Image (cartoon, rainbow, N blue to C red; front, side, top):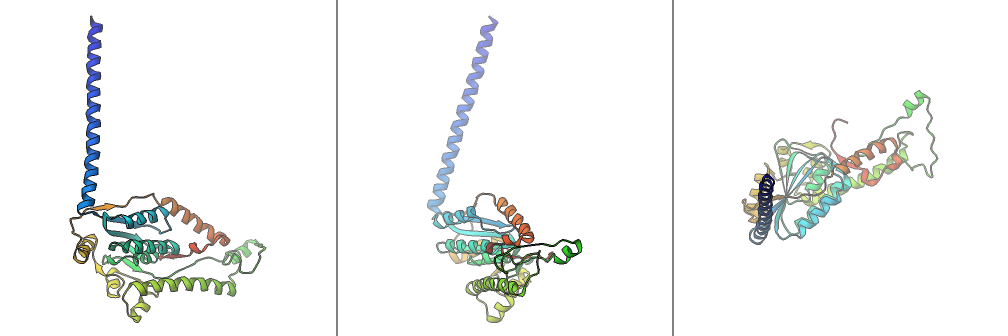
Length: 302
């Protein structure tokens, strides 16, 4: 008799569990439907403002660029806010981000909000947006390009080490820490740096309404505070995201109540690790130097 009672109890427990999971499944479906309807309603009625975060060292990130291409083609995205807090990065990283932000700007307004830092390649990227907002204390500017190496030949002489290299031409693998930096090599490298710097200056001249004197001052490599950047025409306003939203509302009739959605894509930390690893390698073995290794990066501690 007790066996039958235990059997009935187990059956009732099983039925309760089944009922719980059925209800949970129905609730999950309803939540998914409500979310989908909400997104459809959002797209049909007011859309949303997308927000892209760019921080740390900027390198060319295919996932980020793909996300920006999708934003450019998405009619439900009414505007793009780009939050930047970066000392810069590779020239190619800043240049590619600039061009993709310009592509988004062809169909919707794009505004930059600088955090603690927006220098070098980070500022280059911001030039691809229509409006730049910075904090009073934001460090920005440092417009320029740099290639750094070292000369270890004196140390190697003291250690009794003689580096030997067989090269096709004298300029191959220059600069190289294991041999003197020849005048011819310096001239060749300076030509590349100057060309990329001219490209950077041309972007500033095209995208910012500066007088010749302002342009010369802004692009001499110095850094500015946010307030100084405003006075020198490098940014448009002081503030943060609320000021960016106010600009979108006043200039593009995008109400401040339109929701913001963050753009999500693959974590770029792997790319940063790759960049740092290659940078160390380039100091020691400069035959690995590539054009995308030239950096536009503010690093005052070096």
